[in-house]
Length: 251
Image: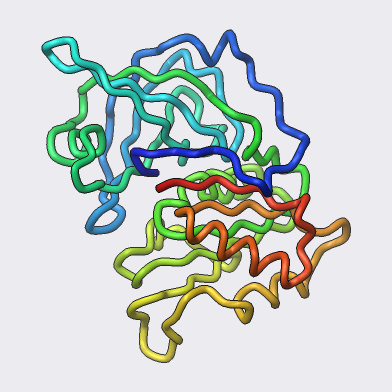
């Protein structure tokens, strides 16, 4: 995700998943093994972390980068990989203008480089795969949601899952190669021929609420402050209970 992080909002609901403070407090060495370009401004960084205790889709971690002169910088980043990817984690980072950590990753980092990580952190936004999930994201907000999609596929889960994701255009759609029938993209600036261009609207949300599964959806919204508020209000207007909307926002 981005270099800034604010985990809670007034839409936050009870029922957090317990996180082991002892495990999450331990810094571990993570070795960069692969870099994959996702869009012109976003790349996925794959790390080997042999002692990683695992995580739930939607959780994040703390990353610490230490310079040769001893200066350190720490950032929260959502985990993009599925929990079953044992001994490895993946982070997808935007190249934030002026961001010292994201800038290092995009301009300097190479396989073999080491950073430190600790986590997983926060059970608030986690999805264990036990309830229907309606995922709504924009830009790099799709990162924790993609962990959920990958988990759903890796386990062959029968529980319904839908993803509604917004991007400026097809070239900015992170993970575009991986999306399937569960995903509906919305393009705000340019789109393929025959596809409407515009902000996420009630017309995008209503069909998903109309196909509400037994027991209803648990909604997960992730994106900028403005997007999170906009998407949450669309969901509520379409009939999604406020207490069943979880939000992670940044910016």
